[in-house]
Image (cartoon, rainbow, N blue to C red; front, side, top):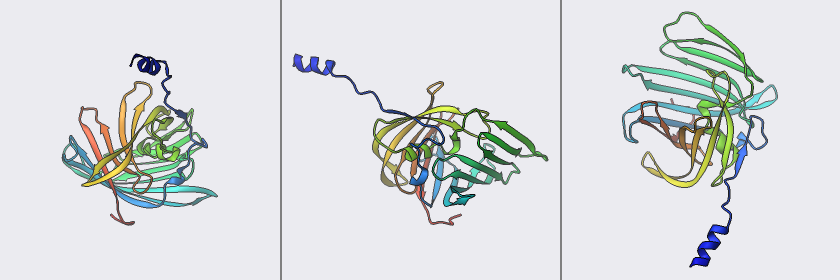
Length: 252
């Protein structure tokens, strides 16, 4: 018994495999994502809590100036804290292999809208907040490229799933002036209840490196709809739950 214990102490503990990726790294290949459509339902407080939003994601693949691109169209409806219903539409174009963003355009029924183009590290755009009557011009240069924050869950599958893998990657959004480092940890395969159906998926935690804050837990699969479930801690201490199921193309 003692010899067994001493042997266990003497054996080295395997360190987690850590992979550092950048936009353009050969370790990232977005071609895992094939054309599909999916519906996301967002609830707050509990998995069966009040529904706050629902949207559909639709991915098509194409070509732009000789580059393979993925075009995401997202249409959604959400409830504001005041109880109003707002509809919105989001169009995003990424490189189909590297996931580098090229354009992000959003408009909503409350009058808010924004449009950004990303050329290399240069970001140019216009923003109009709800209630405003003029556009605000935005132009800045990033110190480094980042994967889009609102689609950060795309990164782990594009790298590849294996239990214990840690992926360190820069994440950026149009409202950010620089990318922030985030860490994705692949916990392993689990079964998760997705709208009444048990689905086997990879559990992946996403943390911000600077303060170690947990930003989300994703449940990912290698086929449509890819992200089947998500848990996002909110600033007020509640949890936001997102379930995603495949739907036919063209579903409103």
